[in-house]
Image (cartoon, rainbow, N blue to C red):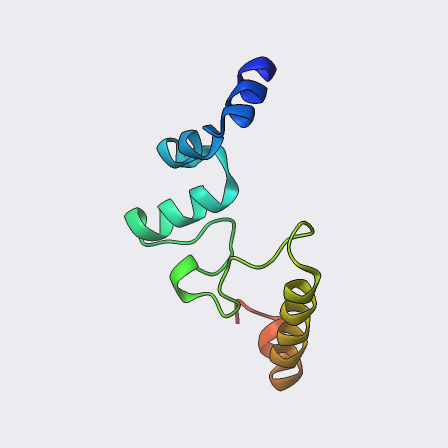
Length: 89
């Protein structure tokens, strides 16, 4: 399995496999559930209804994007702290 993963990564075909099999990533599974089952994944907001856009920058993204996302999150929490603290209520 590791050799196949490495080979597909070097050939640039790894993203194609991810598109074919959405269950291989958490984001793919969340998107699939939102589109097909009209529900959320792991008690998160649905992808189509997420306040933060659901697809936030990660540690490998541009540092400016990460900082901008954090600042936007702080603004959202500061504007309504109870909604951020108790999302299910």
